[in-house]
Structure formats: C-alpha cells, structure tokens
Image: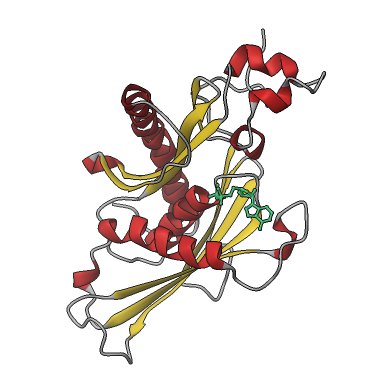
Length: 252
Ligand code: ADP
C-alpha cells in the first residue's frame, strides 16, 4: 500500500535526533533534528544588560541563520528577509514560556544555525533553542515544542518534509515514478502549519498557515499537533535527564 513519500504514517514524525551541550563556550547548547532538518542552538548569558531597554525582566535576543551548505543549492551567506523574520518568529514562540522577570536587567542571546534544511527549520530551531535554554539554566515554565502539521493534497499529516511542502498533484501526475503518491495524498497542493506549543498549558505560542484549509481540518491538524508535541516533549525531557545524570549533575 502507498504511504507518504518517505514511507511514514500520517501521524508519524521524522526520526528525531538530540545532542546536548555540544559547544563548550556556550552556557547551554543543543542539536535537534527532524530527519534531514538539523538545527543547532547555543545560548549565551544571562549577562548584565548595558541597554536600558526593559529593566523589569531579562531581554531575549534570537538570531536564526541558515548555513550556506544547508540547502541543495548554495544559500547566500548574508541574512535575508526570511532569516530576519524567522528570528523574530522563534523569539516570540519561546518568550511566553520563559520567566524573564526572575532575571531582570540581563540579556540572553540565542544563536540558531541550520546545518541542513529539509523543511521545518523554524520548528526544529524552537526545539533546539528550548533545550539549550533549559541547559543554560534559564528559568522556564516548560519546554516549548515546535512542530509542523498540515494538509498535503487532501490528507492531514504531521511534520512535513520539503517534498511534501512542495506537493502539487497536477505536477506529480506527469511524473511516472511519483504519480502513485496521488493515491495516498489526493488532489491539490500543500498547506503547511508550523506551530509551537507549551504542552503543560496546552497553549499555542505560534500558529502560522501557508495555504488553504477548512475549519474542521484545521481543528484536526491542531489536535494532532498537541498529541505529537507531548511525544516530542517526553523525548526531550528524557534526553535532558540522561545528560544531566551522566555529566554528574544531581537530579531531584
Ligand atoms: P521552514 O524551514 O521553517 O519550513 P520555509 O517554509 O521558509 O521554512 O522553508 C521551507 C524549506 O525550504 C526549508 O526548510 C528549506 O528546505 C527550503 N528553503 C528555504 N529557504 C531556502 C533558500 N534560500 N534556499 C534553498 N532552500 C531554501
């Protein structure tokens, strides 16, 4: 029976890989990957702020960058509009989970580098940053979990890869090797919905939508996102606990 392009079920995430504290000079760092999408996040600070921006709470800065060799075609090294926007999107997705008022007058810098891109880089970045912030000891309510759900053709699926994001049944019909996938996905194009969730509060801190979808399908997709966010959180949490115990830190 035909399944997704890469053989997954509709509710199956790509293989997740997590590596913690990979950079000595950062306070906390992590690599998080969804299949071939690999994000590295490093946190520096909190350090005292020299700016009189917001003294009641810490100031969070996020820089998202895609490395030149992260895409099949060389990407220009200079940050484009997309990277500037995604830096802001990731910052806003993370901020509601951080207890920034507990460390007033300080600055926290989060640097995210995309090592390899196959769709879902903003959501992988959110997970890498969440892990790095928690390892850096930044006070937070919960980990923020990023993942994409969406509609490919007529099918609701989780964690779209690039081939699914680019789905177009009209184009596929002309490809003798790939036209069989129309049987699985159905007619139409793809609607990608990257989200970020604070699982303990079932709160969405990011919902973006690129494409068309009915209210009912959107509801199904967001419920699927909530379910899968818990799965990702449990995996992230167990990796943190394993890392802390193996590095000699005492866990209560
Ligand atoms: P996200 O990576 O969060 O899904 P987009 O929807 O903007 O964000 O991008 C989807 C995918 O398109 C990326 O993950 C990457 O695989 C590819 N992509 C984005 N920008 C570029 C670029 N400048 N050059 C080549 N591929 C790109």
